[in-house]
Image 1 (cartoon, rainbow, N blue to C red):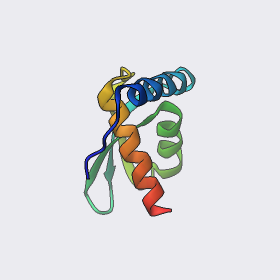
Image 2 (image 1 turned 120 degrees about the vertical axis):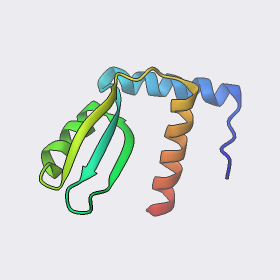
Image 3 (image 1 turned 135 degrees about the horizontal axis):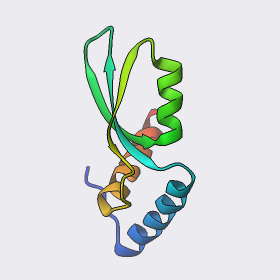
Length: 90
């Protein structure tokens, strides 16, 4: 299912992401499961990365792939997709 956003929605979401970015910048991370020997890459914010690393460091190796992401249209679409996934699973 394709996500459709009009230019005004993209602008509003970029503004919201920029505000969130001021509080805790976005990063792309890699989390490697020590048990399953599998990897997942994800976008998250710095605080959440530190929290995951502290709370799940025994089970996963965490690495930053890219630090301080720019607020782009692609990041907007990622955020919407992530929110949609969260909505479906709760």
